[in-house]
Length: 84
Image (cartoon, rainbow, N blue to C red; front, side, top):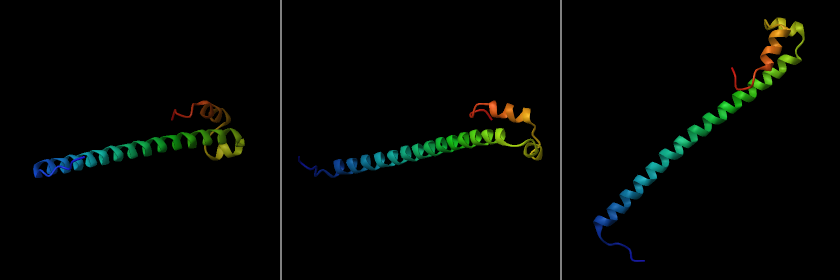
C-alpha cells in the first residue's frame, strides 16, 4: 500500500481521524452517562422493592413508629417496583 506524500492529503487524513476520535469520545461519553443512569434507575427499583418487602415483615408497633398501619403497608407492598 502506497503512503500518500501529498501534504494536503496527509492533513485531510489526520484531521478526519481527529474528528472521528472526537465524535467517538462524545458517543462513548453519552453511552457512559446513559449506562450510569440506567444502573441508578435499576438500583432505585431494587431498593424500592426491598423496602416494600420489609414493610410486610414489620410488627404493628414498628409500623406505628414510622406512622404506617398494616393496611397501608399492604397497599404499599402491593405496588409494582417501578411505581413510586
